Amino acid sequence: MAKQKASILGIVMGLVVLAMCAISIVGLAVDEWTLVSVDSDLVDIEELEDYGIDTSKSFGSYSEDVLGEEGEKLEDIEISFDTENPAAMRTVMVVFGYIAVIAMCALAVLYLLKMVLNFGLMRFFVGVLGIVTLAAGAVLTAMTVLYCDSIVLSIDLPLVGNLVEAKTVLGIGAYLACIGTMAGGLSAVIGVARK
Image 1 (cartoon, rainbow, N blue to C red):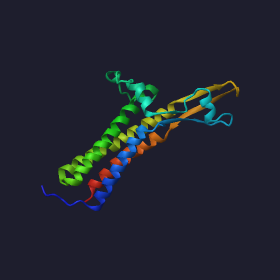
Image 2: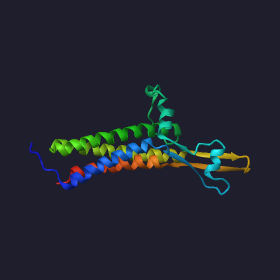
Image 3: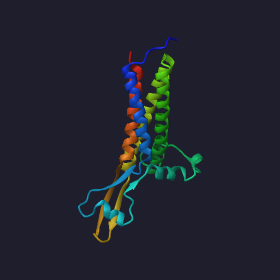
Image 4: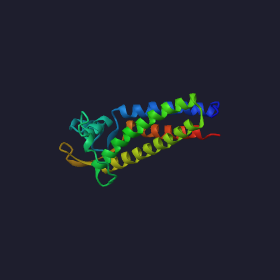
C-alpha cells in the first residue's frame, strides 16, 4: 500500500477532532448536565435552592444513580428505549454518554494515527469510527432531550402559596458533550472522505 501525503483539510479536521474530544470530555465533567427552569414570575431559581431543590444535576450524579457509587449496579443495567419511562431514558442517557465520549477519545487517537500512517485501511477505520461516534452523539442528544422533556416538577411553595411547575432542561455539560461528539464524528468523516 502506498503512503499518501496528508492534505491541509485532513490536518485541519484532525485539529477539530482533537478539540471536539476535549470539549466532549469537559461536557461530562461539568456540574450542569441538566438544569431546572421555572416559568413563573413568583419565584426564581435562587429561591428554589432556599427550599432545598437542586437546580442543577451533574452527569456524575446521574451515573451514580444508574451505576452506583462503586459500579455495583453495572451487571443490573437493562437498556430500553422506552420513552414513557424516565428511569429507562436516564439509563440510556448515561450509557450513551459514556459510549459517545469513549468513542470520541478512540476516534481522536485513531485519527492521529491516520495522520502518521496515512493509508487506505486506516482511513476506513477512522471513517467507520467517525460514523459510530456521530450516531452515538445523536442518540445521546435525543435521549437527553427526551429525558428532560419527561421530567416536570410541581413545586408547592408555602411562602408564595402557589403550585409552580419547573422543567428540566439541558445544561452546559450536555450541550458540550453532545455537540463535541457529533461534531468530532462528522469532522473525522469529512477528514477521511476527501479525494
